Image (tube, rainbow, N blue to C red):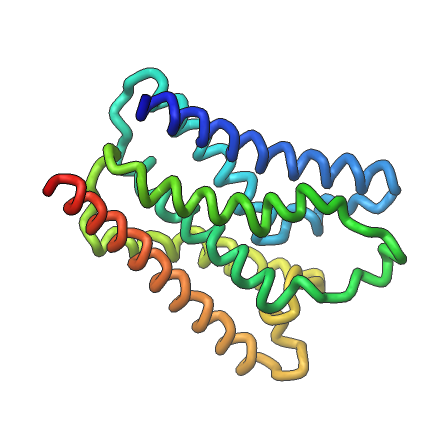
Length: 213
């Protein structure tokens, strides 16, 4: 029952994330507004795609009784933290942001947007916390959660300098606060990633201990 439940959850959330991205892409293509070089630069979209793929791989491992590797477990923790932060940052800073002027009065499809920014982050975090039969990592493994966002950030900054286009206003060094403001946001988000990673992992360790009592 354990295996079936988690296989179904991972498959459902993984397919929902990838399907949501496909839905948004096809809708924007239909409206003549798809700019792939911009769309696939957003951290939320990159995270949704990678998280969806990691969930499908982990579902396959579980369904075929394969031992989950340390790398896969770290990837699951990293993507759980990434999706939690996607949800928090979106609702705190971006939910009410105005449309790109090039999009006119275009409205994003509601359901895929909610899946990526609300439902999937919650389900992925919960699934990671209660999937207690996966390998137990040391607490310092939570530091690995910074690799994915910092790699994305480095690419985005280099790309932004070259093209003068930024996926999010708070990483634009040419904005109102300049480089100082950008660095503050980057430092804050990095610290937030570490904190969320440690929190998820620490709670999972404690739940594991309670189950064994």
